[in-house]
Length: 464
Image 1 (spheres, rainbow, N blue to C red):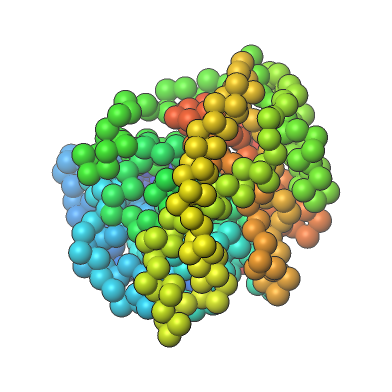
Image 2 (image 1 turned 90 degrees about the vertical axis):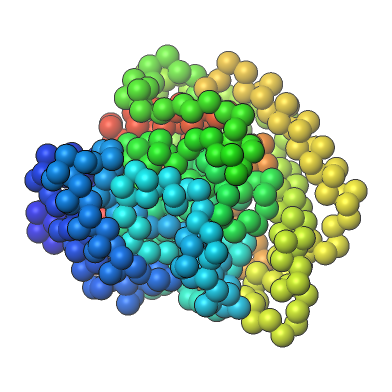
């Protein structure tokens, strides 16, 4: 592609070009629609593309900007939304064939907020059925193609599979996903992009199809940490329709984004957790620690009161119990055409008693306190995001989950950032996870920004 192609630019660069009137939203949307027309037949990132509406919105944005009526710095920038996020009158499948033609009767607060900032929705992206799965597969509506291997289909990561593929494949400059056990971070890892798992209450979930309300969190999926901070800044905020957002003050991550990390204390993961990762992933992880230490942070050891696997089991108990309570009519209908891998995951919630569910919630509160105590005086915990790089689809064991390093973030109500940190011997991306305390997204973004300013892993593009 020629260097003049605007789809090669970051959102911060696109914003500057649009504001300076060097780039028209009309031309930008057309460039992305052309990319979608060219690459979507193979990548299959989208459930639906809103081509004509996007063109109309781009024309309106162009006129507003030229007349001095821009609503903000992101006016005219396209975005893709995971197909759990409702837009009134638009199909919302939740990755389920039964709902393939179902239209939303409301618009999610998140979607309203983005449109109010002038963003242009290109369309809805694929998800694992009901968002219940980390590999990114969907046997009924199709599995997006991870663009890092043009010859062999590999796991795109889930459940926000389409959002990860859309950004990595250059079909959208950024996208929104949701994360209940790693569903923003897993596709970010395997698709070689940046993904932010936000803390409960930072971003409204009103109008987003639920899987596990205790754990569900929306988050940005982008090409860089700077872009993730920009999108997160407009996603968050109080919403009277989502009471958990009302208790939190708005915190802009941008003022501290480029402050650097000198003097921060960052923990490496416990030695016992290293055995879950492949050699390539560990090599990239260790190199990241060296680079971060070179940037002025102190790398320290951390002793945790429990293992990640212990937390993952409890997280799954909560997910299964709540998702079954929400979806039991479909799950218990033997004639419903459901994904054969997803049905048993949710059906497991049928056998979880009220006592077991409540005990998991009680343990969660106790373990949150224990983790906070272990993290005292430490600004972040650093881990790999995934145990290995993307697998060929025919090698996936659907009875196992790839979320060893991610589920504890949801269970303990933390925030976490996944970002590219290298490549394995096959040219597939690896990923670093930066885990911070609840509501400390600004610190996670600050650490990630310092790392990306010193490295170039996030600048590489998937082959075409």
